[in-house]
Length: 330
Image 1 (cartoon, rainbow, N blue to C red):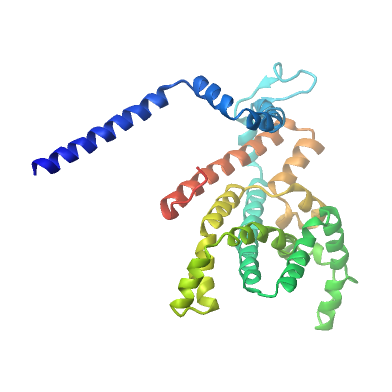
Image 2 (cartoon, rainbow, N blue to C red; image 1 turned 120 degrees about the vertical axis):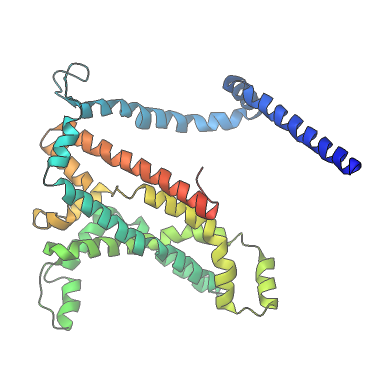
Protein backbone atom coordinates (compact mmCIF):
# COMPACT_ATOMS: atom_id res chain seq x y z
CA UNK A 1 0.00 0.00 0.00
CA UNK A 2 2.79 2.31 0.97
CA UNK A 3 4.87 1.55 -2.15
CA UNK A 4 1.84 1.96 -4.42
CA UNK A 5 0.95 5.18 -2.66
CA UNK A 6 4.49 6.50 -3.21
CA UNK A 7 4.34 5.56 -6.89
CA UNK A 8 0.94 7.20 -7.31
CA UNK A 9 2.13 10.28 -5.50
CA UNK A 10 5.20 10.43 -7.74
CA UNK A 11 3.08 10.15 -10.87
CA UNK A 12 0.76 12.88 -9.64
CA UNK A 13 3.77 15.08 -8.94
CA UNK A 14 5.10 14.44 -12.43
CA UNK A 15 1.72 15.23 -13.99
CA UNK A 16 1.42 18.41 -11.92
CA UNK A 17 4.95 19.43 -12.91
CA UNK A 18 4.20 18.76 -16.59
CA UNK A 19 0.96 20.71 -16.35
CA UNK A 20 2.79 23.55 -14.66
CA UNK A 21 5.42 23.44 -17.38
CA UNK A 22 2.73 23.56 -20.09
CA UNK A 23 0.96 26.31 -18.22
CA UNK A 24 4.23 28.22 -18.15
CA UNK A 25 4.61 27.77 -21.91
CA UNK A 26 1.06 28.96 -22.48
CA UNK A 27 1.72 32.01 -20.36
CA UNK A 28 4.44 33.03 -22.81
CA UNK A 29 3.21 35.89 -24.88
CA UNK A 30 1.91 35.25 -28.36
CA UNK A 31 4.60 37.55 -29.71
CA UNK A 32 7.43 35.53 -28.16
CA UNK A 33 6.05 32.26 -29.43
CA UNK A 34 5.53 33.79 -32.89
CA UNK A 35 9.12 35.03 -33.04
CA UNK A 36 10.43 31.66 -31.90
CA UNK A 37 8.32 29.82 -34.46
CA UNK A 38 9.30 32.31 -37.19
CA UNK A 39 12.99 31.63 -36.55
CA UNK A 40 12.40 27.89 -36.86
CA UNK A 41 10.13 27.98 -39.95
CA UNK A 42 11.06 31.22 -41.70
CA UNK A 43 10.47 30.04 -45.29
CA UNK A 44 7.04 28.64 -44.49
CA UNK A 45 6.05 32.11 -43.24
CA UNK A 46 7.36 33.66 -46.49
CA UNK A 47 5.33 31.17 -48.54
CA UNK A 48 2.18 31.91 -46.53
CA UNK A 49 2.57 35.68 -46.84
CA UNK A 50 0.76 36.12 -50.24
CA UNK A 51 -2.20 34.08 -48.98
CA UNK A 52 -2.40 36.12 -45.77
CA UNK A 53 -2.28 39.38 -47.73
CA UNK A 54 -4.98 38.10 -50.11
CA UNK A 55 -7.34 37.29 -47.25
CA UNK A 56 -6.70 40.58 -45.48
CA UNK A 57 -7.26 42.70 -48.61
CA UNK A 58 -10.12 40.82 -50.26
CA UNK A 59 -11.88 39.09 -47.33
CA UNK A 60 -11.40 41.04 -44.09
CA UNK A 61 -11.08 44.69 -45.16
CA UNK A 62 -14.37 44.58 -47.17
CA UNK A 63 -16.15 43.56 -43.95
CA UNK A 64 -15.99 47.20 -42.92
CA UNK A 65 -18.56 47.84 -45.65
CA UNK A 66 -21.14 45.87 -43.66
CA UNK A 67 -21.80 49.04 -41.73
CA UNK A 68 -24.01 50.23 -44.59
CA UNK A 69 -26.49 47.50 -43.51
CA UNK A 70 -27.36 49.84 -40.64
CA UNK A 71 -27.44 53.01 -42.72
CA UNK A 72 -29.51 54.56 -45.45
CA UNK A 73 -26.40 54.59 -47.59
CA UNK A 74 -26.03 57.27 -50.24
CA UNK A 75 -22.86 57.11 -52.38
CA UNK A 76 -22.70 60.89 -52.60
CA UNK A 77 -22.64 61.23 -48.80
CA UNK A 78 -20.19 58.39 -48.27
CA UNK A 79 -19.84 55.66 -45.68
CA UNK A 80 -19.45 57.97 -42.67
CA UNK A 81 -22.05 60.64 -43.48
CA UNK A 82 -25.05 58.55 -44.55
CA UNK A 83 -28.05 58.48 -42.19
CA UNK A 84 -27.95 55.83 -39.45
CA UNK A 85 -31.18 53.75 -39.46
CA UNK A 86 -30.30 50.84 -37.16
CA UNK A 87 -32.11 47.59 -37.97
CA UNK A 88 -34.61 49.18 -40.38
CA UNK A 89 -33.19 47.35 -43.42
CA UNK A 90 -33.51 43.98 -41.66
CA UNK A 91 -37.07 44.75 -40.55
CA UNK A 92 -37.97 45.80 -44.10
CA UNK A 93 -36.56 42.53 -45.44
CA UNK A 94 -38.45 40.29 -43.04
CA UNK A 95 -41.61 42.32 -43.68
CA UNK A 96 -41.20 41.84 -47.42
CA UNK A 97 -43.49 39.29 -49.15
CA UNK A 98 -40.39 37.90 -50.88
CA UNK A 99 -38.42 37.07 -47.71
CA UNK A 100 -39.98 33.68 -47.01
CA UNK A 101 -39.92 32.74 -50.71
CA UNK A 102 -36.20 33.30 -51.21
CA UNK A 103 -35.23 31.73 -47.86
CA UNK A 104 -37.42 28.69 -48.62
CA UNK A 105 -36.00 28.30 -52.15
CA UNK A 106 -32.41 28.68 -50.96
CA UNK A 107 -32.79 26.05 -48.24
CA UNK A 108 -34.81 23.68 -50.47
CA UNK A 109 -32.29 23.73 -53.33
CA UNK A 110 -29.38 23.30 -50.93
CA UNK A 111 -31.06 20.42 -49.10
CA UNK A 112 -31.75 18.66 -52.40
CA UNK A 113 -28.13 19.20 -53.42
CA UNK A 114 -27.05 17.82 -50.05
CA UNK A 115 -29.27 14.74 -50.27
CA UNK A 116 -28.46 13.86 -53.89
CA UNK A 117 -25.14 15.58 -54.52
CA UNK A 118 -23.24 14.83 -51.31
CA UNK A 119 -23.40 10.99 -51.34
CA UNK A 120 -22.89 10.72 -55.12
CA UNK A 121 -19.06 11.26 -55.09
CA UNK A 122 -18.74 8.88 -52.12
CA UNK A 123 -20.62 6.14 -53.95
CA UNK A 124 -18.59 6.74 -57.12
CA UNK A 125 -15.33 6.56 -55.17
CA UNK A 126 -16.39 3.30 -53.50
CA UNK A 127 -17.32 1.78 -56.86
CA UNK A 128 -14.13 2.97 -58.59
CA UNK A 129 -12.08 1.60 -55.72
CA UNK A 130 -13.48 -1.88 -56.38
CA UNK A 131 -12.40 -1.90 -60.05
CA UNK A 132 -9.27 -4.02 -60.48
CA UNK A 133 -8.54 -3.25 -64.17
CA UNK A 134 -6.37 -0.15 -63.77
CA UNK A 135 -6.74 1.14 -67.35
CA UNK A 136 -10.53 0.84 -67.26
CA UNK A 137 -10.58 2.55 -63.86
CA UNK A 138 -8.40 5.44 -65.09
CA UNK A 139 -10.61 5.94 -68.15
CA UNK A 140 -13.75 6.09 -66.02
CA UNK A 141 -12.12 8.53 -63.61
CA UNK A 142 -11.04 10.83 -66.44
CA UNK A 143 -14.48 10.79 -68.02
CA UNK A 144 -16.13 11.58 -64.67
CA UNK A 145 -13.79 14.56 -64.14
CA UNK A 146 -14.48 16.19 -67.52
CA UNK A 147 -17.81 17.94 -66.69
CA UNK A 148 -16.06 19.86 -63.89
CA UNK A 149 -13.84 21.61 -66.44
CA UNK A 150 -16.72 22.80 -68.60
CA UNK A 151 -17.49 26.47 -68.07
CA UNK A 152 -20.62 27.14 -66.04
CA UNK A 153 -21.87 29.40 -68.83
CA UNK A 154 -21.48 26.55 -71.33
CA UNK A 155 -23.23 24.10 -68.99
CA UNK A 156 -26.16 26.49 -68.59
CA UNK A 157 -26.25 27.03 -72.36
CA UNK A 158 -26.36 23.27 -72.95
CA UNK A 159 -29.08 22.90 -70.33
CA UNK A 160 -31.14 25.64 -71.95
CA UNK A 161 -30.76 24.10 -75.42
CA UNK A 162 -31.67 20.63 -74.19
CA UNK A 163 -34.72 22.01 -72.36
CA UNK A 164 -36.31 23.81 -75.29
CA UNK A 165 -39.41 22.33 -76.92
CA UNK A 166 -37.22 20.88 -79.71
CA UNK A 167 -34.28 19.96 -77.45
CA UNK A 168 -32.88 16.59 -76.43
CA UNK A 169 -34.91 16.27 -73.23
CA UNK A 170 -38.15 16.94 -75.08
CA UNK A 171 -37.21 14.46 -77.81
CA UNK A 172 -36.78 11.79 -75.16
CA UNK A 173 -40.05 12.73 -73.46
CA UNK A 174 -41.89 12.83 -76.81
CA UNK A 175 -40.75 9.24 -77.41
CA UNK A 176 -42.85 8.28 -74.38
CA UNK A 177 -45.78 10.38 -75.53
CA UNK A 178 -45.22 13.44 -73.33
CA UNK A 179 -46.25 16.77 -74.87
CA UNK A 180 -43.39 19.10 -75.82
CA UNK A 181 -42.78 22.28 -73.81
CA UNK A 182 -39.94 24.49 -72.59
CA UNK A 183 -38.88 22.66 -69.43
CA UNK A 184 -37.14 25.65 -67.84
CA UNK A 185 -40.39 27.62 -67.98
CA UNK A 186 -42.09 25.05 -65.76
CA UNK A 187 -41.94 26.07 -62.10
CA UNK A 188 -41.68 22.56 -60.67
CA UNK A 189 -38.87 21.43 -62.99
CA UNK A 190 -36.30 24.14 -62.27
CA UNK A 191 -34.99 22.66 -59.02
CA UNK A 192 -34.65 19.06 -60.34
CA UNK A 193 -32.80 20.35 -63.41
CA UNK A 194 -30.56 22.55 -61.26
CA UNK A 195 -29.71 19.77 -58.79
CA UNK A 196 -29.35 17.05 -61.45
CA UNK A 197 -26.96 19.11 -63.58
CA UNK A 198 -24.97 19.96 -60.44
CA UNK A 199 -24.59 16.28 -59.54
CA UNK A 200 -23.47 15.49 -63.11
CA UNK A 201 -20.90 18.28 -63.09
CA UNK A 202 -19.46 17.62 -59.64
CA UNK A 203 -19.62 13.89 -59.03
CA UNK A 204 -16.26 13.03 -60.58
CA UNK A 205 -14.36 15.99 -59.17
CA UNK A 206 -15.84 15.45 -55.73
CA UNK A 207 -14.72 11.81 -55.71
CA UNK A 208 -11.02 12.76 -55.96
CA UNK A 209 -10.65 13.53 -52.27
CA UNK A 210 -12.28 10.22 -51.30
CA UNK A 211 -10.13 8.20 -53.72
CA UNK A 212 -7.05 9.94 -52.34
CA UNK A 213 -8.12 8.96 -48.83
CA UNK A 214 -8.66 5.35 -49.90
CA UNK A 215 -5.16 5.19 -51.39
CA UNK A 216 -3.85 5.46 -47.83
CA UNK A 217 -6.04 2.67 -46.43
CA UNK A 218 -4.16 0.06 -44.40
CA UNK A 219 -3.83 -3.14 -46.55
CA UNK A 220 -3.50 -5.21 -43.37
CA UNK A 221 -7.14 -4.48 -42.61
CA UNK A 222 -8.19 -5.99 -45.95
CA UNK A 223 -5.99 -9.04 -45.34
CA UNK A 224 -7.53 -9.50 -41.92
CA UNK A 225 -11.01 -9.17 -43.42
CA UNK A 226 -10.21 -11.81 -46.06
CA UNK A 227 -8.92 -14.17 -43.36
CA UNK A 228 -12.19 -13.64 -41.49
CA UNK A 229 -14.06 -14.67 -44.64
CA UNK A 230 -15.31 -11.25 -45.76
CA UNK A 231 -16.19 -10.91 -49.43
CA UNK A 232 -15.71 -7.76 -51.52
CA UNK A 233 -18.99 -6.22 -50.39
CA UNK A 234 -18.29 -6.81 -46.69
CA UNK A 235 -14.76 -5.46 -47.14
CA UNK A 236 -16.23 -2.31 -48.65
CA UNK A 237 -18.77 -1.96 -45.82
CA UNK A 238 -16.47 -2.78 -42.89
CA UNK A 239 -13.06 -1.54 -44.08
CA UNK A 240 -13.32 0.87 -47.02
CA UNK A 241 -16.25 2.96 -45.82
CA UNK A 242 -14.96 3.44 -42.23
CA UNK A 243 -11.71 4.72 -43.75
CA UNK A 244 -13.72 7.50 -45.40
CA UNK A 245 -15.73 8.49 -42.33
CA UNK A 246 -13.40 11.28 -41.04
CA UNK A 247 -13.23 13.05 -44.41
CA UNK A 248 -16.97 12.53 -44.96
CA UNK A 249 -17.70 14.24 -41.63
CA UNK A 250 -15.47 17.21 -42.47
CA UNK A 251 -17.02 17.58 -45.93
CA UNK A 252 -20.52 17.35 -44.42
CA UNK A 253 -19.74 20.07 -41.87
CA UNK A 254 -18.58 22.37 -44.65
CA UNK A 255 -21.69 21.60 -46.72
CA UNK A 256 -24.01 22.35 -43.79
CA UNK A 257 -22.07 25.54 -43.13
CA UNK A 258 -23.08 26.84 -46.55
CA UNK A 259 -26.69 25.67 -46.36
CA UNK A 260 -27.96 29.24 -46.87
CA UNK A 261 -25.65 29.95 -49.82
CA UNK A 262 -26.02 29.01 -53.46
CA UNK A 263 -23.78 30.14 -56.26
CA UNK A 264 -25.34 33.19 -57.89
CA UNK A 265 -24.17 32.56 -61.45
CA UNK A 266 -25.95 29.32 -62.29
CA UNK A 267 -29.36 30.38 -61.01
CA UNK A 268 -29.00 33.78 -62.68
CA UNK A 269 -28.19 32.13 -66.03
CA UNK A 270 -31.08 29.66 -65.84
CA UNK A 271 -34.02 31.40 -64.19
CA UNK A 272 -36.63 33.83 -65.50
CA UNK A 273 -39.47 35.85 -63.94
CA UNK A 274 -41.86 33.03 -64.89
CA UNK A 275 -40.29 30.68 -62.32
CA UNK A 276 -39.30 33.10 -59.55
CA UNK A 277 -41.64 31.18 -57.24
CA UNK A 278 -39.21 28.22 -57.17
CA UNK A 279 -35.99 29.68 -58.59
CA UNK A 280 -35.48 33.01 -56.85
CA UNK A 281 -32.86 32.67 -54.09
CA UNK A 282 -31.15 35.02 -51.65
CA UNK A 283 -28.17 35.86 -53.85
CA UNK A 284 -30.28 36.68 -56.93
CA UNK A 285 -32.67 38.78 -54.83
CA UNK A 286 -29.71 40.63 -53.32
CA UNK A 287 -28.46 41.34 -56.85
CA UNK A 288 -31.81 42.75 -57.97
CA UNK A 289 -32.39 44.74 -54.78
CA UNK A 290 -28.84 45.96 -54.31
CA UNK A 291 -27.53 46.48 -57.84
CA UNK A 292 -30.52 46.86 -60.17
CA UNK A 293 -32.58 48.93 -57.70
CA UNK A 294 -29.41 50.63 -56.30
CA UNK A 295 -30.61 49.93 -52.74
CA UNK A 296 -27.16 49.03 -51.42
CA UNK A 297 -28.04 49.06 -47.73
CA UNK A 298 -30.98 46.72 -48.21
CA UNK A 299 -28.92 44.26 -50.27
CA UNK A 300 -26.07 44.41 -47.76
CA UNK A 301 -28.44 43.69 -44.87
CA UNK A 302 -29.80 40.57 -46.59
CA UNK A 303 -26.28 39.37 -47.39
CA UNK A 304 -25.23 39.95 -43.78
CA UNK A 305 -28.21 37.96 -42.50
CA UNK A 306 -27.25 35.14 -44.88
CA UNK A 307 -23.63 35.08 -43.68
CA UNK A 308 -24.55 35.13 -39.99
CA UNK A 309 -26.94 32.18 -40.41
CA UNK A 310 -24.26 30.25 -42.33
CA UNK A 311 -21.75 30.90 -39.53
CA UNK A 312 -24.22 29.65 -36.92
CA UNK A 313 -24.94 26.52 -38.95
CA UNK A 314 -21.21 25.84 -39.36
CA UNK A 315 -20.57 26.15 -35.61
CA UNK A 316 -23.57 23.95 -34.81
CA UNK A 317 -22.58 21.26 -37.36
CA UNK A 318 -19.02 21.25 -36.03
CA UNK A 319 -20.26 20.91 -32.45
CA UNK A 320 -22.68 18.12 -33.39
CA UNK A 321 -20.00 16.22 -35.33
CA UNK A 322 -17.55 16.48 -32.42
CA UNK A 323 -20.16 15.17 -29.99
CA UNK A 324 -21.31 12.27 -32.17
CA UNK A 325 -18.19 11.16 -34.09
CA UNK A 326 -15.18 12.80 -32.38
CA UNK A 327 -14.36 14.35 -35.78
CA UNK A 328 -14.55 18.11 -36.29
CA UNK A 329 -12.94 21.05 -38.05
CA UNK A 330 -11.70 22.56 -34.78
